[in-house]
Image 1: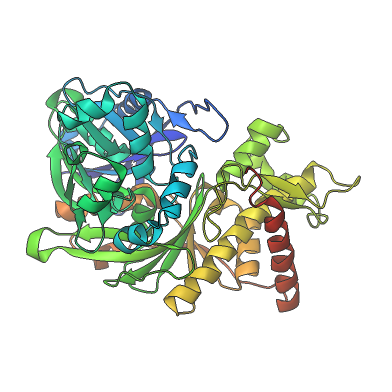
Image 2: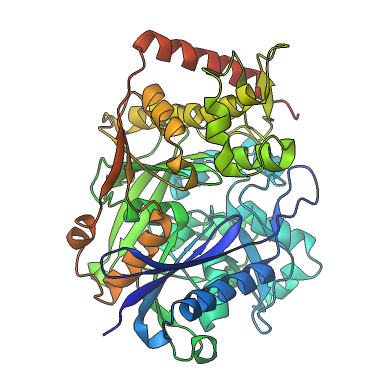
Length: 498
């Protein structure tokens, strides 16, 4: 009997492979960072071929290091940085250009043009998304327009488009597929009909032949090439990273929410079988689809996306040089009692929900001669919590249900100071689970359900365990004053790069 699920977790800054046992515990992990490419201000790219090589390397390494054979793996689950866009040659399997990363803002002007043409409401109604450079559709149009000969080759059926899940599955198996959760992030997929939308494809002049087949998030979609692991392994789980984290956090019921503190921060609220249209600039997105055909069941989410979460801490390390390791930020920030009046708006690539301002830019206000690096570090941490508070306020207005608790995960969720401050500014308990690798765990669970490694969502939910609960203890007047000051500072950062 197979002993493990292999989760492939392809993130914005690293590729990881994690082995999970039947108890949902980590048996082994391998990780490899890869370069970020910044060709021009506001542009962010990855070499898709490097992503593939790094991901295959860590998948093979975790098996080798822990003496696990392919026959010990019941299935592979794949989760990925979403919206990042790859265009490749179907015959050679080679990417035609660097992948355009979700953080990239080069198509902001195109989105402005489409809004001026009155197309924003159409895109939102069909896809649940705000018309923004964040999503894949305009990135794909840019590649077709700027890679020599790409549009003509796409018309002839020679090329393939995919988000990172599709790219990896193609390289692993030769299949050209994506799941509903990733498809729902492209600006090209109608989340109500569950089909690629011909009208939206026409608006962006994207040939239908480029697009992958859309499959369930939990179901055997393909098998790996024999040469890669020694024997074929079923690929049985696929979900975008935030949807996977929501599943891994066992937020399986309507009204449950989680926030992931990764490169960005992403809060998702399960709204069940109802696709709630946001009136407050949040996204309506597909969480996951379980089963196939007539038995398929889809859960929808409201989502608020913050572009700069953990990436803000990376900037303190790599850009400003005030820490050597990201783990040092908590001690530095805790060395001062407060931020000394400093407010940090980390709009390095614009502001996400609920502002959706691609022209906002990173801003630090409130500095005096007494300001030091500890104040800036503390303000950077606080900015992560404040951005999340903005998202939650919008989410509660849309969903019309008060949040009882917020489940948290991701690297920065291990920062106790940040989590306590988050509970304080939200006025909601923040709960951290024992296993914070919930993105990979969610992909593993989706794959395991498909091959009966786990039998039900209830069995999965029973494995969720709390590590620590952070109760809010900030006075209401202080909370209100802090949020007021934060929002004044946001106004200073907005519409800067116009």
